[in-house]
Image (cartoon, rainbow, N blue to C red; front, side, top):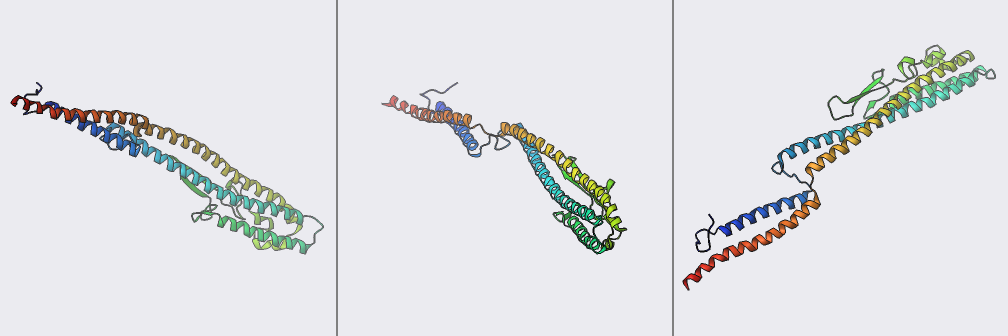
Amino acid sequence: MFGDLTRIGSNYYAQESYNTLLRVNSDIGTIRSRLSTGKRINSAEDDTSGYALSKQLESRVRGLTQALDNVGTAKNVLGIAEGGYQSQMSILQNVKEKLTQAADGSFNTDQRKAIGDQISQLLLEFDDIRDDTKFNDITLMQDSGSDRTIAFHVGEGNTNQLSITLDNSNRTDVGEATTAVNLDSIVGGTASEWANLDATEAQTGIATLSSAITALSKSIQNIGDYNARLSSKEESLSMAISNTDTTRSRIEDADFAKEQMDLMKLSILQQSTVASFAQSNSSSQMVLALFQ
């Protein structure tokens, strides 16, 4: 079955040592590749099923990571919209204060008109805030005069969307649609009539401003509710990314301690195999002794 030392046509032991050396060298090359890349699976050949599974998990991690970025973007958009509403709220509080001042009997007609002019300018700014509250050139607080609806993709799947509605808010349509208030109705419905503000209009306007503040507060509350949902999604996405990537790492990534231990073992085998190979090649030289 095996060759012997006196038959030199086939050096079985040298061939066996040579084949072993090739296998050891191949294994050493594989381990060095793993140590250099940090991955246990560098090609499908290394582990076919593991490769397929790890790529599926990697795809999920990348999708979840982008969804998490989208959640951050959504919160930024809501932050800009809330900032616009808060600026409008400040104007409404100021206008209510001015109307309370104008309702007092100690002011004369000209003084009330001056207050009306000031309120008119404040309401112009109120509309400008709506027009200037934008993200990526999208006007957030209006969509052709109506509420703005934006769908954010906040999950890995193709249906994981959160649709938010930002209320249109201008001087004739303040705050949430169900409670929206027309501020110009205080002076008869025309913006130019603020210049003729009288005491009765001012007294009526105080209640109207209170309603407008309530309507705008509801719009701001809605943003807070959306942000609460987004924060919850942010937490769940972060956890899903962490757990999924841990699973992928266990399948695909190299265990450096194990690989280094195996490399040390193979290095010793490589040296011993080379020595055995050299001895196997020299054994046939003993045949020459038969001719002496």
